Image (tube, rainbow, N blue to C red; front, side, top):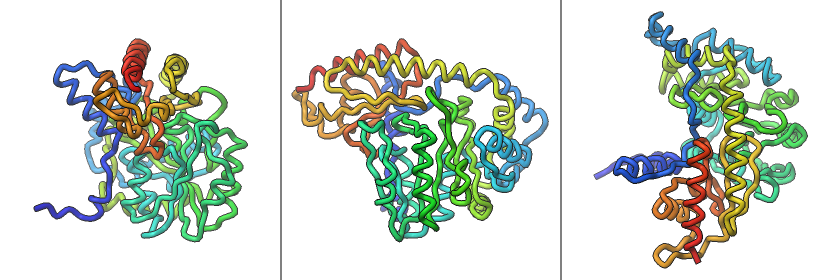
Amino acid sequence: MEYLSERVKSLSVSQTLAMAQKSRELTSKGIDIISLSLGEPDFNTPDYVKEAAKKAIDDNYSKYPPVPGYADLREAISRKFKEENGITYSADQVIVSAGAKHSLINVILSIVNPEDEVIILAPYWVSYYDQIIFAQGKPVVIKAKLENDFKIKPEQLEAAIMKKTRLIIFNSPSNPTGMVYDRKEMEKIARVVEKHEGVFLISDEIYEDIIFTGEHVSMASFDFILDRVITVNGVSKGYAMTGWRIGYIGAPLWIARACNKLQGQFTSGVCSIAQRAALAAIQGKGESQKIMKAAFLRRRDLICGLLKEIRGIKVSIPQGAFYVMPDISFYLGKSDGETKIENSDDLALYLLDKARVATVGGVAFGAPECIRISYATSDDLLIEAVKRIKGALEKLN
């Protein structure tokens, strides 16, 4: 008999990781699967970063590191915040964790009490919802529409803030939609937050280096809410370092100290070698980011153009990251004679089975009328994938 805690039973399995696992299982059986499910750059970690990791091994960085991260790494992150984002966080306000996902749960567990309300903007990244549930908070979802480029309006946020609201999670550039808020739009959101003392905001900026038009704006750069913003970032996306597992926060000191306390009991400090690699990445600023961004822009234009040619598909052109989230509601209720499509999860499974293309259904993102497609793969594979998707969708009536 299993005696699982209610805490674990309340969690869903990450749908992005579940679809990736299914893809791997089919591939291991010799089935030709094109995977457009994981949010992972298809580039290798830059050589100068790898060299720093090799040197760290030779230099015997093999002891327990400090819980919040090495001092020189936190100082480099502090300088990065100041120079690139216009935010003043001292090194003591920076905590380095095992990926941005780890950073997020540290913050949520530090400031959310049972029954506190946490506002998330749909379509949202899958783990936001379940991390709130894990902390015994109550997710409050604000729906953004494709017609508005998946952005909410300030009045929607104002209407959602109640007495029990403790936290807002904000993400630009966005996973899963790729939308980007401009400075004016963000300031309007910030002004709403300013009016509500005791309401905090996590700004998830992990995709800041992948913006195709305009500039990245950090929410904490609006100094009138600096003391209530926690900035989450990391090296995974901008430096093709997903497997190194390095994320970090800049936060009000009392929140940073709380996250340090939590991390001290759960994981201690993050892998010493990965930290040295992250330091090189943040200090180095090679050409790799420009190369990746140019490739993602080309792929965005390619896949959006191809998707628009499919009957019934609606597309909002992403301004950043490497995802597109087409509306597939035209196909809901349709069938190929064997499979009936009730929601986007059904459609994602149908495409995996019939087209041999892995996408992710939008239900777990709070967008049951959409699917998420990652275009972090080669042009040739994107062309072939959309060709397969189009063929499979044509069989639905």
